[in-house]
Length: 247
Image (cartoon, rainbow, N blue to C red; front, side, top):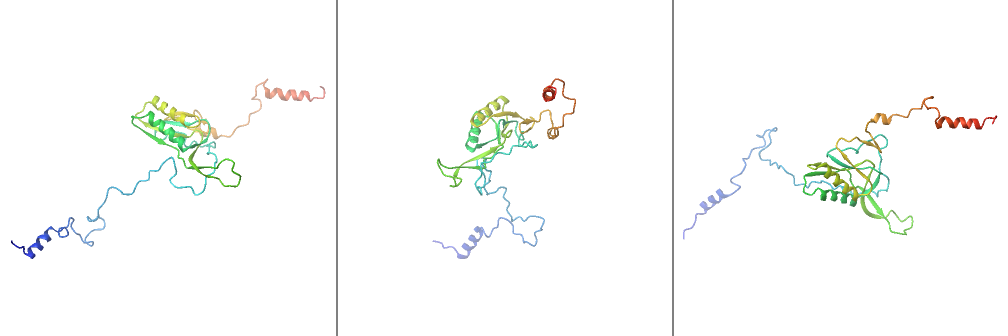
């Protein structure tokens, strides 16, 4: 049996060693210009950090203190924010009264839309977020025993607020039917709106009137503008006739 020379075996191992054959050429830091990135630096086109997309049915951070019942902020002071469609082509808007809608009810409305539009190419936008905590107590609990324990998350939705927006290759009648089913799953009355519909201030739609006209103060009725024979003129004359000393 022929024995290998230890020196030749070490030379062969040095050739096969990874450390002896570098993949990237080594460049001294002094010779590397500051404006050009070093070839030794590896740039990853992706991130290993998990993206926080968030969930619209619960807040991203817990409450610091327990929420009160409260009422939604109804934009009756000259604000039309959140009453028009921004991203989609069709939308669902609350039309009757402001209220507090639970996260489960909002989820049921979303599921109704998804079931109706199954197999179609669309994108659904949610304009509200269930970030209000609802706390309950048992029956026959005396006063002064606290607010109660957490029950569910809810959202305060003002009147004329857009809740869902829909965009995609969907016919208008199909979108109407999907939003009708969603409105039946949630409390309150809702209306179907399209892209370009006028905004709403409170319950007044800005269709034919501007915001400046709506904010304009009421003017006093000039004298002589009331027609003869109206109630406003007949009442003072009858009152003065009844109080006259000749009667």
